[in-house]
Amino acid sequence: MRFYWLALGIFAVWRITHLLNAEDGPFGVFARLRQFVGKDFWGALLDCFYCLSVWIAAPFAYWLGDGWKEKFLLWPALSAGAILVERLTSNRQEKEPPAVYYEDPEDPDAVLRQEERTIPGARRAG
Image (cartoon, rainbow, N blue to C red; front, top):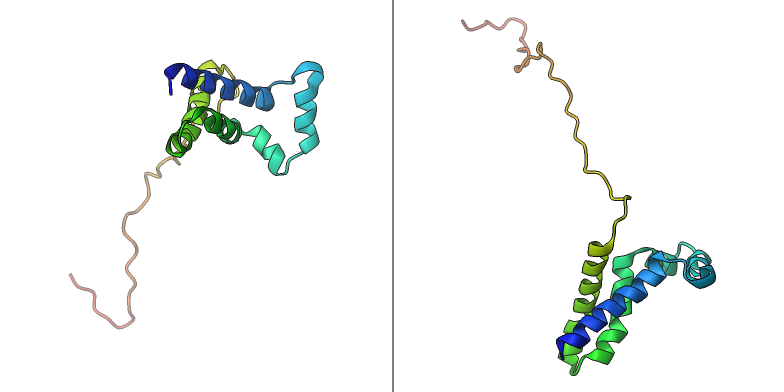
C-alpha cells in the first residue's frame, strides 16, 4: 500500500466521521439524523467521535488493504489517524478543566495518639 492511499484513507475517515458526529450538514440533515436516532446505541455511537471512527474505518480498511493481515492492521490505523486529525484540528472550548483537589485544613490541636483505656483495679506503669 502506498502512503498516498493511507493518507487519503485517514482524511476520508476523518471527514465522514466529523460530518456524522459534529456537523449539521446541508439543510440540517445530519443534525436531524442525530436527533432521530435518540440516545440508544445509534445515538451514543453518533455522539462519540472515537467510537464512530472505528466503524467508519472498517469499510475503508477493507477497500484499501491488500491482504487480510493488512486489512486487519489498517482498520485501527485509519481510526487512529482520524482521531489524531480531529485532535489537531479541534479548537473546542468545551475541554474539561483539570481536577481540583482541596485538602481540609489541619487541626493544630489534633492528637496523634488515642487515650489509654484503663482497667479498673489495674496499676499504671510509671
